[in-house]
Length: 500
Image (cartoon, rainbow, N blue to C red):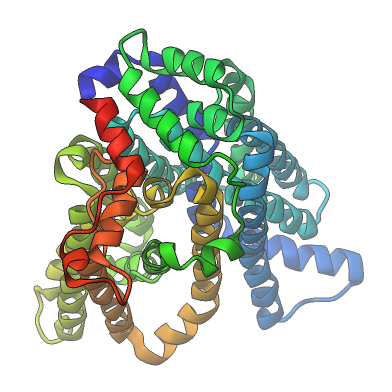
């Protein structure tokens, strides 16, 4: 697999070019506001004082700051709701290209906000960044998974979360005081996404459109085969093309389905529930709580306050390195195993972390155990749910339902992020470190759900995976014989005949 990837330079270029203007942007804006928060709050106060001769109270500044943070989620939700329809109508590549204009507009707002003495420009910039991240989270994933051959689908899917982790780490790294996290340079920190958007805008036109989109949505077989040759090289790809043709034949006369169609379709109930569980738990897994408490744990372990931000870079670096290592093992391990093993190990780690935080006052060496558990939790999160979930809709839904599935998944992701931002401070205030027990429940139940209800997707076509879902969850009223071994669908037979 890795040899094939090295022989496909255009596919490697597609991974990097789509990633730097794709989920990288989402990850960057999750972490980037931590460093310049005090400078932005000062700008809010100064703006109101100069413009209205009003000195804001602390709670008023905090309210405006919370709105600046949360407006990103509102923009992201809007972007994710539009992404499926736009990518189906205009194509994955063109949608990604036009999406960069939102990031460039947001960057312009950020760069001029301090000079114009306007915190409102930061609000507008964050909203535009949110739309950009909402669209890219869906379309970047769809584009890459559809560009990859079946045997590399897992590796390419993990690259989506790798760029998200790199975005988080870049936001932390560029935000340190030695780089852009200063009073003079913070607008350049917030405007950095404009540079990555420009990079994608100038390089993406040299890449082909998604082969699957060209064949299954546009009916352009010649364009599909040309795109495959550019992406995968000049080898024999007839098996993959034939499998696409079988899927195309099964979809003749079938329109691209809406979100409501997917919700109401009884045949896809378990795939729908899988998306609900996976994307909900992605936000409610406790990863944000672990990052928040890492500062307290590091401080208790004796690390000086002025070095905490530098030490916290280690957590971001751990997430990036684990995500990159995940690329090497996902095809041999399988997504189902990585998903349920990740959830269950995260649940155990959260239980132990709650215990060590409870005992850290009584036992002097307990903070070091908490530090170790924080890194273990990040490892299991990055090598499991973070690496698998984002690309999951592309694995378990056919082309006609794929856009709707990504819309549902990404909408849940943004709603979860927004609700977590609102509720998490209240949860921490009332439960303190016992809040981890809430996330323990989410991780444990999700792990059990995946273990019993989700089939393996490794080296399988969408139709084979659909048949496996049907075998695991037969409809009521079917015979005992059918429950044990359902008849093989005709499209699977056709696919098998093509292969052998």
